[in-house]
Image (cartoon, rainbow, N blue to C red; front, side):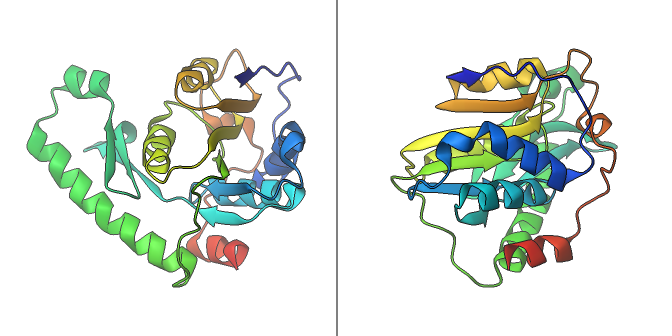
Length: 217
């Protein structure tokens, strides 16, 4: 199932505002004991915090790292996530003829950062048990969807009963693509002229590690 939303594309003030507006689209999950919100650090955590608070659901991080093309790091050639999952963007890899050894090197570097973040954000708390639960994966937006694809693949290994992908803003094509991968997709806005996630925030400043830790605490 995919939820189509026709609200006017009014930019969010910041990630907290985006989370509150997204939570209204997820109201059907409020008060359900088997629901857990999993936020993708770092930008997804302020959004996920507001969603979890509105729904009365627990919050945990689900760490994903983008695999950037060397020299053009903003361009994702794939992503990795907890559970030793790697998802590659085959179109980018083929188009740029990225050799396997480069992919392996970038993956190894990002794996170290993924492990660091897991330890830092949870402050030695164990990862939440999602088996048999409805897991709502939250990020601050979807562009290519590479990071969220890795998160979905990793999460499925943990055997939740239901997977929901929820974001404040997304490219319509990315939102549609996840319909084949998960049980429900909730994109609060899918502007026709998407351009980039940050365009739809008045304040899209980088979320810091300290902010993530404070919200998780």
